[in-house]
Image (tube, rainbow, N blue to C red; front, side, top):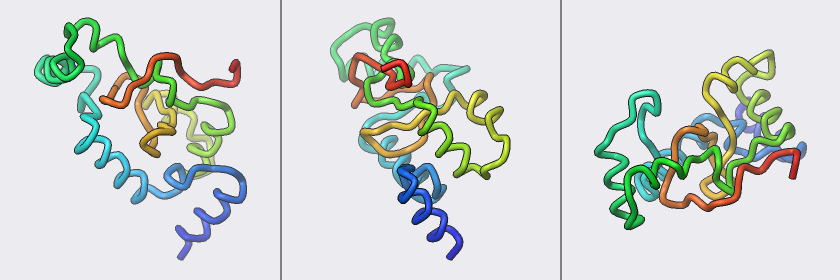
Length: 133
């Protein structure tokens, strides 16, 4: 019940529901993995196999594929308002260390909290969405 209340409060404040509900976020992220090749699993230890599959899908080189990251995608939202929503959803305390360590933003296309160092086949040049825009 508390989750439902949190989601309703977030929506009235303009927060995307997946920033407030981990189950919804995980469901949307799993869809991104299954249908849009979201990855790699660990950006600090990138899988050449992952990048080769993405390069093949885009008909480009691994190096070119590796340059297309969530952090420079036109759907990657790192506005202060959205990051505040993520903070509120994590616990509403001082969770900025988690947000920074996770390099988190919000994918407006696939509706989940996203890591800036990952990518997916939905990547679009021109991002991120920031307060500078």
